[in-house]
Image (cartoon, rainbow, N blue to C red; front, side):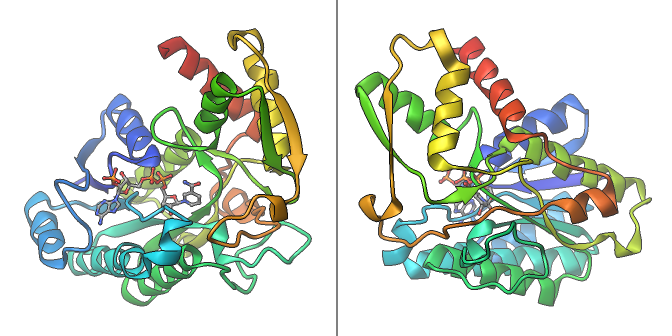
Length: 296
Ligand SMILES: NC(=O)c1ccc[n+]([C@@H]2O[C@H](COP(=O)([O-])OP(=O)(O)OC[C@H]3O[C@@H](n4cnc5c(N)ncnc54)[C@H](OP(=O)(O)O)[C@@H]3O)[C@@H](O)[C@H]2O)c1
């Protein structure tokens, strides 16, 4: 009685969850969008009935922050309704749901890192839809974990690190925002924490008060510009040429969606309650880059 069902298996996080679950010999049913579209309530119910999981990890999400501004319905369909569908089927089966949310539920005006109890106030449609998904999960599922994370990158999928490396090959100069701060989070660290929590749940020794909402991101905080500088410092000579990094304010890099100026997450609750934390972000980044270049 220890099966995990994973949705969004082809995303950055989903990819890492599968790799690590298989390495740990966990029984995992991994579904990408083609095998389960989480907006399809009936399909979700059928799959859960047939595969009989004890825990569901929802790594599926609509993550295109700018596109969401003009595609509100689709963002809400996945991030709110899809999350609710999974919460419903999990609850009906008596399974635990691990769901992921985002730093973009906050407005970014707080000077310090955000704690779980801080008031939400999303600046854009993506954040609104994720916040609505959190609310749906809380309403429907009694035993859930909502892990709010931020600035996710990994070896698989599109992300800031891989974009920077591509731009370095294409350009001599790269302009990067200096006045937005967050916590870069390696998808592999996030997957590891989700699976450690899963194993505790499946073993049956999960504390009753261990459910709820937790911040879960790389330790430390940095601006996008600082993040980019560290990428190029760590990549060093593996790159044929180093680009010149030019710091700019967000106002000089207009995007469809407004982004919080500060979206750093205080993850001490996860550490206090579960003894778990992601690594310092530069350490995790260094690992990711080694892995990327080893496989290149
Ligand atoms: N990326 C970030 O910087 C970031 C920051 C904060 C929080 N988060 C949260 O962290 C979690 C994981 O994000 P990620 O970076 O791994 O995202 P990702 O790489 O964009 O992966 C999301 C996956 O969900 C799939 N998907 C989209 N709509 C679906 C649907 N209707 N049914 C089933 N699958 C669907 C996508 O499928 P396709 O491959 O077919 O598109 C994709 O594989 C999400 O909850 C996200 O909101 C991410």
